[in-house]
Image (cartoon, rainbow, N blue to C red):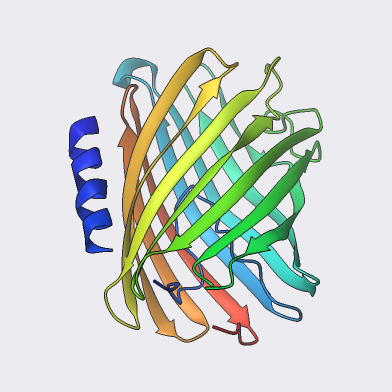
Length: 250
């Protein structure tokens, strides 16, 4: 499987200046593109994830998931998110609202050729969630985001960073992701991605996914994705809808 993913990325790179025009992408990789001043975007999602063998499987469903993003100006984007979560395993079943996620994305660099952008994103998770769902502590995830436009239709993005927000986390986790997305036409795009985390800087959990985005209008987009673990048992599915108010410049 790892060899297959590598070959796909190698093939795509050989095809490859520009940025896709899609509002969002249902992947784990955060985009380095910051919303411009006065732009508002809302993202609503349904996501379900299964972890472990069938006799000891954990199931987590997030619906509805809501993220609000606003372009403050000066290369800064504000973000707030929350979701209703259902969790179950062999022994327990819980449901309720997760911890509120507040953060910002800051543009660090944009190349003169407009084919490279770099940003920093930092999120804080506040222990506001329901009993059995909340991590019961303040947590943080901070990432460096990089985007490269390879052609007018194809780009790559990657993130590296650190997260520490789960209740039983001590050292936290190193996290990474890499995605390649291709714009088939003005309305339809595809992506393939690999991502993972080095848990407590000891144990690697690596995964991959693929998906599509379809623009219903210039400011309304439907998203669909599915993925699985590479070196552990995990499957997930995602459906999303993104809505933007205001026009982002090319």
